[in-house]
Image 1 (cartoon, one colour):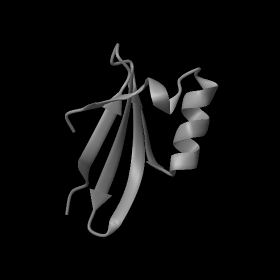
Image 2 (cartoon, one colour):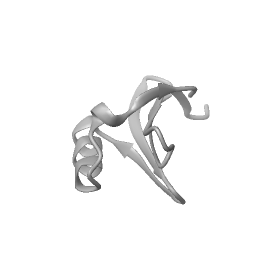
Image 3 (cartoon, rainbow, N blue to C red):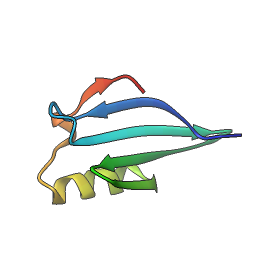
Image 4 (cartoon, rainbow, N blue to C red):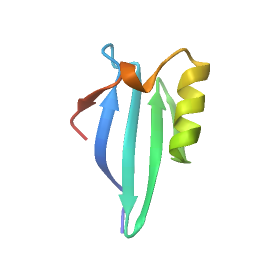
Length: 65
C-alpha cells in the first residue's frame, strides 16, 4: 500500500508545503521545501522546523493534496 497525502497546506508563494500522509492506519506529516522532503514527522516537529525557518502554521493555506 502506497502512502497517500490526505490533506495539504502551503505558503502563499508555494515555497513551503505540509502534507498529512496516511498509509493504512499510520498517519504522519511531511514537509516539502525546494528539493527537500522531510517525512515521518510529528506535528511538534513540523511546528519546530517551520518556526526555525521563520514560517508559522498560520502562514499556511489549504491546497489540493
